[in-house]
Length: 128
Image (cartoon, rainbow, N blue to C red; front, side):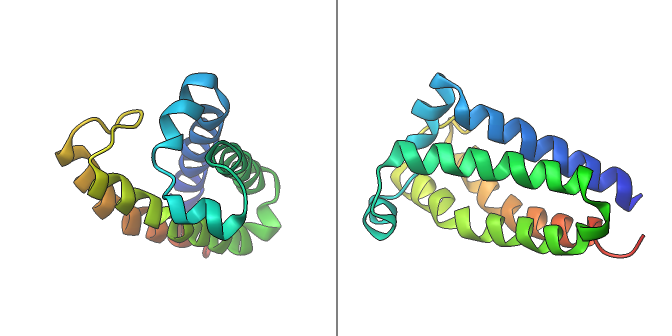
């Protein structure tokens, strides 16, 4: 069961990562990046979107290709989900549409989904 959950998580991460790299995805996800993030990271919103997409793809590949490191990668995935949470909050506060998140209800539900994703990452990579 955990292996199936881990593979599904990898698919989700990989698809999201690829979505961040497409022209429409890059435009759509830039609005989720809070202004303070560009100051903190000393870069622009597009670079943050592309970098997060690349990280998602790398994490997805790690979940699939490095089974001996699954626990560490699971914690890295969980940390990634925690790290991007402020962007989700910013998007909800600003009432900004992004791919698949085009209503206040969807944006609010997305906030409550984040802890589920963190738990999924940890659970699916622990034990056998």
